[in-house]
Amino acid sequence: MYFKVALYVSLSFFAAGLLFRLVQLFTQRVGISAQEPKVSAVSRIGLSLKAIVTAFFSPRLFKLLGSVFLDGLLQLRVLRDRRDITVWLMHILIFVGFVGLLLFHALGAFVSTAIDPDYQSTLNPFLFLRNLFGLLAVAGLFLAILRRAVLKRRTIKTTAADVFVLVLLLTIMLTGFLLEGLKIHSYAAFARMANDYGSGAQAEETRALEAYWVEHYGLAATHVKPPFDEKLIASGAEQHAASCATCHSKPKYAFVSYGIASITRPFSAQADRAGAYDIVWYIHVTACFLGLALIGFTKMFHMFATAFSAAVASATQRKQPSVNVANAATRAVIELRGCSHGGTCHEDCPVRVQRQERIETQPRYGAVWDEIGRKPGKELGNREAIG
Image: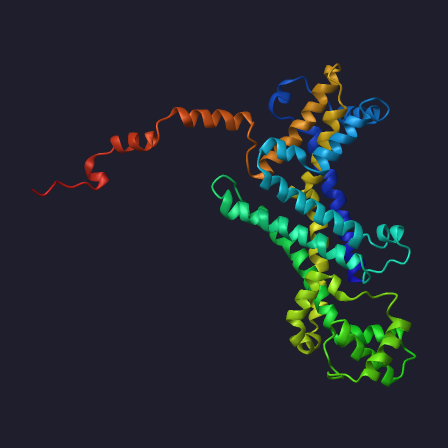
């Protein structure tokens, strides 16, 4: 019940956020475009869509697709503009990680099933892919934190909204790993599975299956204690092959979550009693849906805006001045928001270049010495030399 309600609420906010952003993109005018004759929002929307649709039926199609793929998805424009590979690496790690999780985890019932009709989230390679994409996203997020806190601390402006987004995304990733790790060794999860899919099993057969899972699947020993008799393991293997093998690969393929499970396994009984799995599940799901709801209201929106800006730019013909003026106005709003929300400057930004030139023409500490020269000696704390 909670999942469905949270999903529909977050989708409503997501749609409202996209609408809010689209209204801004097609109504605001900034920079040079503000001095041009005003073009209505309806005209700007129509001309942008017309340029993109027309490009699909023209030789510019390959340019359009290449621009969207290279600049919008692979973020190569970031690499060209910034000339800083760490910025591109941060973007691409986060992008690939979250898109991979969206396709093969959140939408696994649709995407993964299309690839493998026997899809189960607990089968390999989906266990491995989920952990791989999660690790890529976490690496990108930590690189973002490193840049803001250490490498570019003096040049990147970090706001409370930036901190919130980073914390939210890290919460999604880390609780996801923890959730899977808790489930690996949880006897409560094992008991639910055995009850749902092995309801006809006798107590001794369930005991044998538990022993087999303790031995091979990382389950915390609860009603059985190692070392196990070979006959018990063999009996458990038969039960596993009959009821579990088609749905469960060995959890070691979930290499990150399995490592977490190895650390938390000694506390498995206490975690089950405290309902730790359910608590982490609610935190994880709430964080995921909160992130979805806030996409249109935070800097996360630029993942859509970048691709759209690249598409409009590559689709517009230079021989159509009126179309260029309208689409340039839209792109100016997109790029200004990317600049201000990104918190750092492009190397070729004219404002940045002029500011750097002005700084370089002034003597070092010139302003400081001028200020000191205007102050009387008493205010500077000087004193007469003692001879």
